[in-house]
Image 1 (cartoon, rainbow over the protein chains, first blue to last red):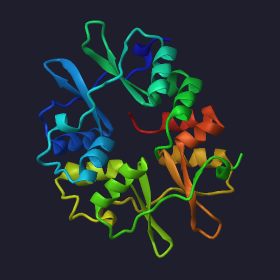
Image 2: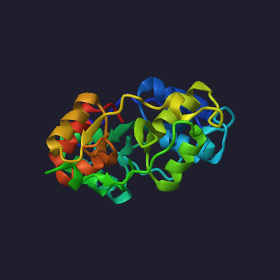
Image 3: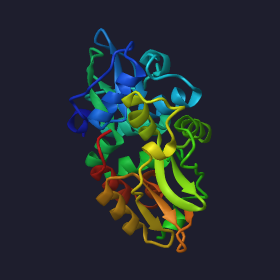
Image 4: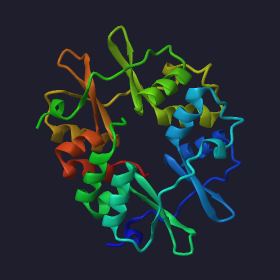
Length: 137
Length: 136
């Protein structure tokens, strides 16, 4: 099975100079915990609800005045839309992550593959990814 | 299999009057995403990194001025340590949550059961919980 068959295709994103408050508001409205950071059509980072809480608020940064690019993760692990889901699952396992931005071969963003999406394709692959994740409750 | 075989025991907790900034710092330092909120040994609620992100930062509140009890979830999904893991998984599915606070039979807190913990017991049950959960 290919990643594009189970990934979430309609993906919202933020720009690097958006404030953390704007990113947090967007996550709340969309019911997501993760947003790709896009500049000029290119993926330059990712930001999660946890990044905003723990790596900004927890160290005393003000969400009204801190830009997404100060807190986002820049080393993003990605896969391609025509990769096999088992390869994508192994990437998640190796890097202890629950989501992968999915790229077209021209490096534009095609979607997001989360472990939840993976569960719809294979319970076993999703279970393996969860097991390998550190105990972060 | 029983919940106590998979749960993370002795959960850290925080007081309802603590500042949300302190809760965020504690989650960062402990590398965890949620804290039971306890007062006088009683479970009052639960607060997650997501609550601090969306309910404090996303609404323009100040994390130093906002207390844990202003944004915590008060209706906590719980199970007992001697429940079967199928019962716990069904509870997560029904409530659309990824973790449960686990109680001793005297209602004191025994630990936390996350969907990650569940996966160590059954890939099938954990995946069903994910399918029932919200996106991303």
